[in-house]
Length: 168
Image 1 (tube, helix red, strand yellow):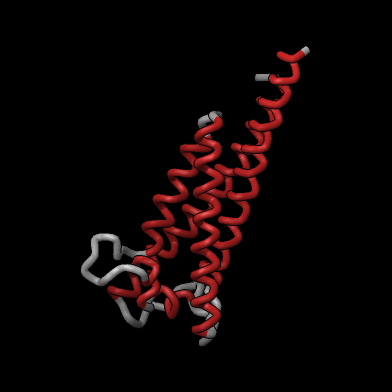
Image 2 (spheres, one colour; image 1 turned 135 degrees about the vertical axis):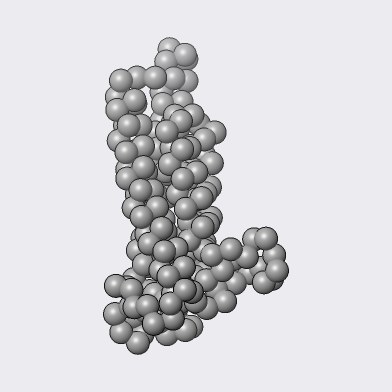
C-alpha cells in the first residue's frame, strides 16, 4: 500500500469513527430518554421542544421498538436505540480494518442504514412530528455512507494502480 493510500485510509477511517461516536452519543441519549420516560411519564427531555417537535412522542410509538416491523413478543422487538448502538459499534470496528471486504461490508451497512432512515423519516412525516434526535442520526448515517464509499473507492483506485504497475 502506498503512503498516499494509507493517509487517505486514515482520513476516511477518522471520518467514519467520528461519525460513529456521534451516532453512539445520540443512540445512548435516545435510549436514556426512553428508559426515563418509561419510569416517569412526566419526564420532559431537552429534545421535547414543542407539541410537534418531540422525540419522546416518536420514541414511545410502536415504531420505537423493532422499527415497528416485529411482533411485540419477538426477541427482535427491542428499542431502536439498541440497534443504533450495535450498528455504530460494528461500523466503527469494521472501519479500523483496512481490507477490501470489510470496506465493502461497511458500504453495504451504510446503505442499509439509509434505507431504514428513509423508512423512519417517512413515518415521522406521516405522524406530522419532528424528532431532532432521529433526524440527527439520519444525517450521521448519510455521513458514514459517504466516508465508507470514499474509502471503498480508494481501495478500487489502489487496485487499478497496482494492475497498471504489473502491466508495465
